[in-house]
Each structure stands twice: as structure tokens, then as C-alpha cells.
Image 1 (cartoon, helix red, strand yellow):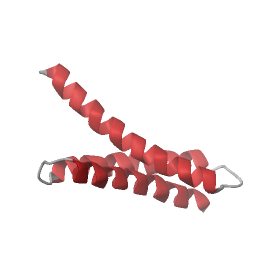
Image 2: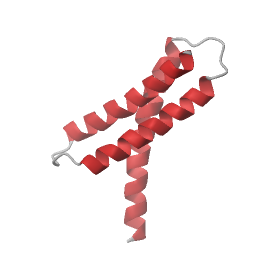
Image 3: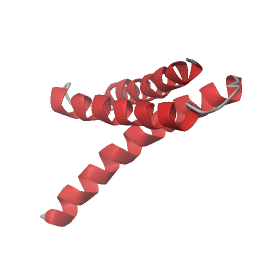
Image 4: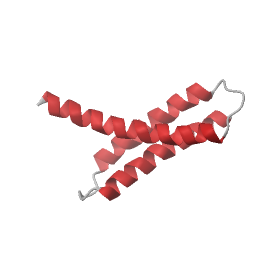
Length: 89
């Protein structure tokens, strides 16, 4: 059951990254951009849940890695999509 907690931490890391990105920008709030971050965070949570499903013990370090992993997936997803749009024309 701890793997669901790890998935929640990964999701929370992605959402926090999205909120901090919005607060750092001068753009108005964009729901579509935030929705992309939510989807990327859900994917990160799913990946962490699958990865930790067969672990016997989960410690604080694992929770911290999940937060950082969720934030990293969010950042990479947004930058990756922007790069693909730029390359596509």
C-alpha cells in the first residue's frame, strides 16, 4: 500500500512544479498548460507506483525521490512539447 503513497508524492511534486512555474511567469493562467502538467504528473505517479509495487520497505529517501521525479517529469514534458512545436514549425 506504500506504493500508492509514493505515487501521491510523485503527483504532488509535479503539481507543485506546475504551480511554481505559473507563479514564476508573467503570463496569465493557462488551463491547457496546467492540464498538461496534471497529466504528466499522473503519468509520473503511475510509473512510481509500478516501480515501487514490489518493494518491501519504502523510506523517506524514496518519498523525496518521488517528489523530485514528479517535478522532473513535469518540467521535461513541458520543455519537450515546446521543443517539438518549435521544430515542427
